[in-house]
Image (cartoon, rainbow, N blue to C red; front, side, top):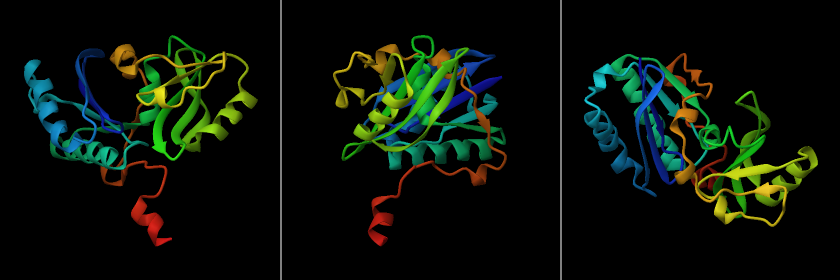
Length: 220
């Protein structure tokens, strides 16, 4: 079985190609705001260099967010389109789980971070049990300072903060650890061990933004 995972929720474009439960190849590229331009050509490049036709893909996995409003929308739309066109199953996963996966074997508590501006982050708190992510604080929009206090009240032990934006939120506390680079630490094999959720009706899958758009807020 050949699977294709797509994540465009951050400034980094991620595409993973798996065949028979083994990662065959992947693309991890900083694209900032160019997901709409880069995504389809990158999928084509990945398949071509592995001599695989798009018709051979058996399953699509979409990172549903949260993250960049435009980025999440692009990835989910392309994943739905491929699933519908190829008539193959579609599964979904939180972008925060995707970010956390590479560190499953390195920490007991993991906090993924996506910068949401104005001191806010898209985040969650996971407890790693038997190499699986167990959610303590649900994925949502948090004010970073307040979220730190919530973590301190619950966790007694080391916490690892991960993500492409973690350098923006470093704090001086021996309990908290910030790895240098998720790109350097990226482990596609661990990403593909996540518990993906089957989408029963692809038309019902919508991006999980976790907040209103600016246009929606202006209408309030």
